[in-house]
Amino acid sequence: MAAGLALVGAGDVARTEDVARTEDVARTGGDARTGGDARTEGDARAEGDARADEARAIEGLIGAGDFREALSRCARAYAMPLGRLCMAFTGSQAESEELVQETLLAAFDAFPQYRAEGSVRAWLFGIARRLCGRHTELKARREARLRLVHDTRPRPDASEIALERERAERARAALARLKPSEREAVVLRFEAGLSFREVGIACGIDEATARKRVSRALGRLRAELGEE
Image 1 (cartoon, rainbow, N blue to C red):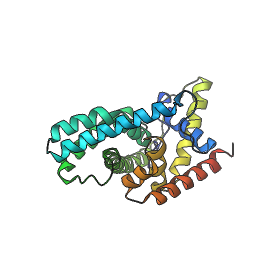
Image 2 (image 1 turned 120 degrees about the vertical axis):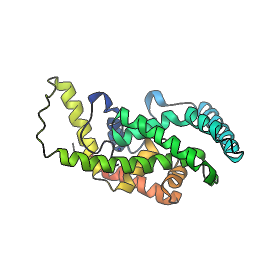
Image 3 (image 1 turned 180 degrees about the vertical axis):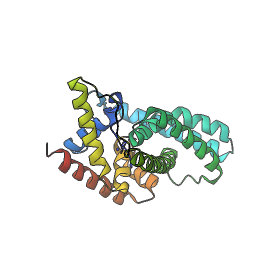
Image 4 (image 1 turned 90 degrees about the horizontal axis):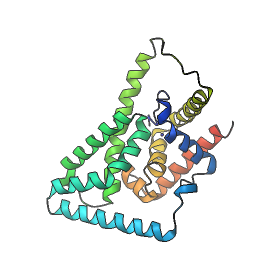
């Protein structure tokens, strides 16, 4: 899912779940909340209220200049969703953990310039998006050079693993063919769970443009993955 939802290579089989979910989202028209993830309206409202309270508390800490406590609260509230986002871009657990740390450190440095023009969450995801984009671009260049060397690593024999890897590779390839702006928008919408307004804030565009980018991305993914 930017240069990457890995955008180069399938990665480990244990890490293909995000890509498979992206494929499912594309096939079903973008419904990211199905099955066991379905929640009652009351639960969703309560969770949203808790997130809003936490965001206001963090904004208050930033405004008061208590940057260390603000960073600690950001880490507790957003480290996991940031990790999922970075994992979606990189396909690597180790790389995603490093990028989350870089995001939080970059946020700490930028706290004095924070103006609360959008949600704290969208602001953090915007930082992560830029860092992941830069990281995956550099990674793609390195791996392009490495492809010049024949890969002699042993292939797994299990047919189920091979099929799962092939499915992940198809999804990654489809994502790789999207425009970078569309990849970022669809990852932020479905992997990070941002609203269209927050996607717009994270990408520096308005909400209507964010909706169009996500819609175009899903249409192209469905067109490619739906051919099978």
